[in-house]
Image (cartoon, rainbow, N blue to C red):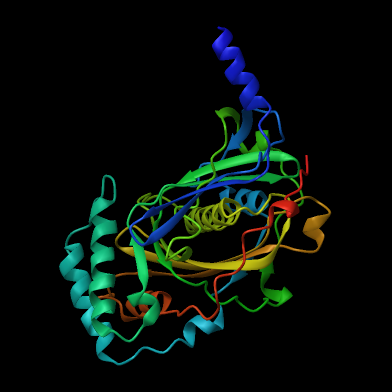
Amino acid sequence: MAHHLRASCFLANRSSTLKTFSRCYGYVHVVHKTIPHLLGPGNVWRKCYVVHPCSVKKDSLLHAQWLTGTKLVNGLPKEINSISLPNDFIVTEFKERLIDYMKISPDTTPLYSNNNNLNFGLYQACLSCLWSLGNFQHIQHSYWSPITKVTSYWRRNGLNFVTFTKPSILYTSSALDLWPTPSTTTLVDPVKYLNPSHIQLFEQSFDDINVFGGNKSLSLYPMAHTLIVDNDYKKHTLEQTISHALLQLFAQSSAQTVQNGYPLDRRLDYPLATQAILTDGLQYTFACYQLNTLNMTETSQQEVFNYMWCGPTYKIWNKEKTDLNNKCVTLLLKFLLNEPLRETPALVCPVNDVKDTT
């Protein structure tokens, strides 16, 4: 009992400043961080509202917008459509490899109990096709994590939230270029306030918070380029699918930012852009996301929002079911070939900059 009490006192009185421990795995330098106390110093057991990313609620998109402080934009950024493919043969080659690796046909509907086949098949088709070209530096110098556990904690209007996701992530050495600010006529604003109890969220206790963005800050490929998210919920509406994509994108971006030492309740000096492809193997939904702030209080949200561009949903087969859908495959390729244009942003804040906002 005495030992237990001493251990509890030690945990409760830990400093909330960053402590960095490093070690080398081969040539990849990995940094482990002790994250600042997100819910205030002295709280060993913390209570958070658990957000499930795959909600089947009627107003799931409305809820996801408020939870993440995100404005929706109808349609993808025009920069995506302007991405040029190296030749006309790449679409044909990619389609052949996609059919071969994923073992799909127009007469069979793939059923994935845990989506390992979907992850692995799409992963193999993408890398086998794109690496063979040798023209894209960000593909040649990238790392694909087929199943990535991401843990994200954040604060909204003084309330604490947590979500756990498992996307497949393409990591690159530098970040995607930021998307242009959308015009106000295309935006769908989040509601001003929602009570978590009204959207059926319940608090749970967690023993010490450990935010994880899926990759370490000083690895060779620290930046999430594209998320491929399993969407095997066949009865989901389009609104629920977009809500799923929104929570996955926000979780990855916010976790990556916090894991690199950025405190909660603060606007980002360097916004973070990410892409996502949601698929059940037959339908593909495309989205882009830009994290601009982690400060999501009523007053701060009057100035800065996060943005999500909602793209189209395509079936992988054409109407005749004789070939793969050219529009779907072309957009899939353009997402993967979207070359990062800027250096890795300085997401890590100096220790002296980390302030207790509780």
